[in-house]
Image 1 (cartoon, helix red, strand yellow):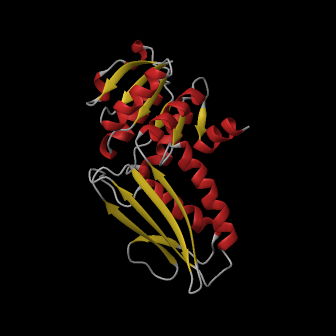
Image 2: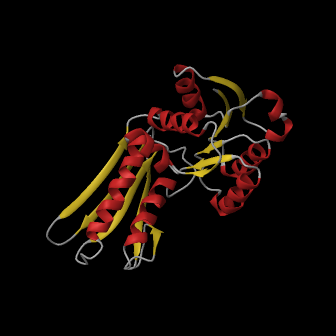
Image 3: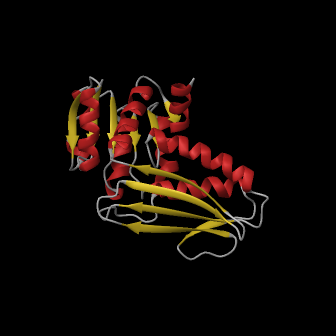
Length: 238
């Protein structure tokens, strides 16, 4: 499989290493204007986007217009997600966006949804989320923490939204910490006067994120339409 890397920072380099280990070829590495490349002539099977928020949308739709499937893990651009989905479908391309491509985190998402359903009627428990990342992470809270909060809100009628650090009773507080060299830790806590319940995912390196992105690229190659990591995970766990 021939892969284009859109964004060649630390995540891009980790993805390249995993892709090469799995027998793929990296045919393009972009850290500048994607529109200066003739993508159709390069022969790209899948593009993997871990760029920056200001570049992500242009990267993604340029690939769609060239008929190239895209795996995107860039956060901070999602106000244009619906527009990207429309362009993807219009050009019969393929797309997976995920706030986190780690296979372990996607299992964690499923656990979070299950626990949220079990806790939704237990009003004596408050819920909060904590995320810890390296100091170079630009956005806060993380996309993963937001996804966790949105999953809880979807099943818990008492929660109407989330807020960074300070929250009303009908909101989920998300606490964001930045510590040197922490790849990513997410904790969902339910707390009552009697006891606490927590689930946690701790990444030990970027390898899990990179491997998940490459596995998603392998899965989407040859497909069309908009998919999710749940689709990828379901195929792996069958």
